[in-house]
Amino acid sequence: DWLADVRAATEERFFALAEHLPAEAAEALLEYAATGVLPVPAPAPTGEDPYTHPDALRRIRPIADQEELEQALAFPWEKWGVFLHPSQRDLVDRGFAGPARVAGSAGTGKTIVAIHRAVSLARHNPAARVLLGTFSDPLAEAVSRKLLVLAPETGGIVPRITTASFRGIAGEMFQLEHGVRPRIASETALRERLAAAAATAGLRGFSERFLLSEWTNVIDAWGISSFNDYATVQRMGRKSRLGPNQRERLWPIFESVRSALRSERYTTWAEVFTGLADALADKPHKPFDHVILDEAQDLAPAELRFFAALAPMGPDALFLAGDMGQRIFQHPFSWARLGVDVRGRSYTLKVCYRT
View 1 (cartoon, rainbow, N blue to C red):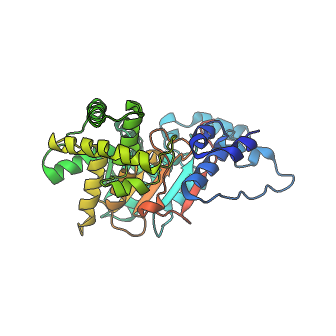
View 2 (view 1 turned 90 degrees about the vertical axis):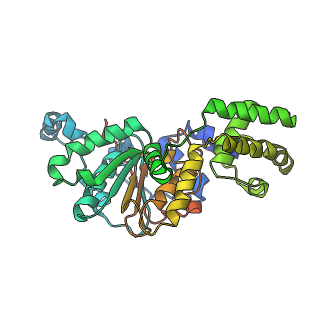
View 3 (view 1 turned 180 degrees about the horizontal axis):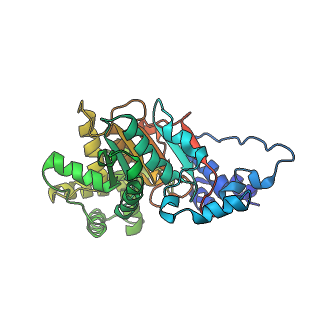
């Protein structure tokens, strides 16, 4: 019984607590922490079969009869890898007036919905340029293989669908914009410059680990360039609170590090995404017509701004799929704050197809 712990949780303890909750509870509470909106589940009808409840279907897939079981066992595995359940077809073919999101825990078919939606958009618009993005290069390669399994059914549209990792497509666009690949400062380089700046300023009371985390998750992530911005930024998900005096002591360190990086012609991925987003905002013609992102729970603020700017604002421009309860690399933040408002266009997949 975690109710007492949830009620007593502070901002610092909440995100650690969420890891111990059932997936459906963690998703609802994380959504509330990030947006201030707490979904109210519909009451289950009296006498309903508990195995058909959406939360039960996350973990159990009932088989109706022996024929259904035999069909499942005989289906080729590579086809199972891109199988779209009929109940998910609406999310693939539906038109959305603005950004849309599909969420769900592992195995509920988020990636498959994203792949099929990319194919559907390209099929229905012969001139469409579609980006199908995901977190890492290995995941992008896996998505590309699944896309090719659908190739016989796509009528030659696969060449109009670009599959890439978040950083992969940003690196390519940076090179097109500047003629060179970005020179990214490594974590070691950042640690060294943060330590040097802290030593020069005589800063005490903050560990090197904290300084790197604050730089990565607050200063760099949000593109903070002035003390006024740092003094007012919401440090959502950070485990330690910082008062005005502490932020005033820290700011010269971060300002010094940013100056040092620029003098050495280093940049960061957050700066790359921010710079590209700013450049795209001024361009009348966008690189893509539709942007579909898998693993969207791991998007950083600068990355979300970049991908939102890759396609013209309008229907079906941005579609995001992810497990919002399993953020591995990013603290939660409000997408609406960055202009990506999915309210009224947010859906949850609850049936797990891996079991």
